[in-house]
Length: 177
Image 1 (cartoon, helix red, strand yellow):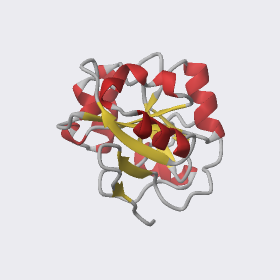
Image 2 (tube, helix red, strand yellow):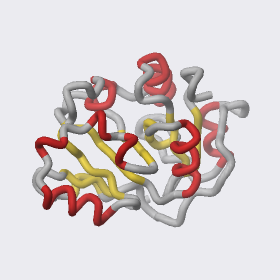
Image 3 (cartoon, one colour):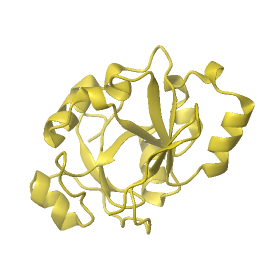
């Protein structure tokens, strides 16, 4: 499904997510249309290891201390806003000069990224401004009973991933469900 430029739903640390190939503008446009989300917001990348997202990050703007900080939180439910490389597509960065990256410890995400061979877009499986899907039934309610959904269970996190701006160390998002 991912290699054919489709969008899928899959379990994440705290809810079901929608994902697609981050290099496919066609797939990303499908995802944004499904969610009714604006491209200017940018999207999160999720990966099983940092090598799967390196091409989107300008590491020249990261200090050794900043790298130590982010790797001390990974793998885990923490998303970092990192300086975007010149090759990071607009649909990932949106109106920003950063790219949002999470190296996950969730087994379903790790397996999915490893089998796919790269990172994925990760955004909540819902329509914009609607509650996230925490059950399979909710995913199907939003996107139809035939929507492709990876089998598995969501993790035990009660909140979406925390978003940390690496340039200043500030938390950008910590929302309770």
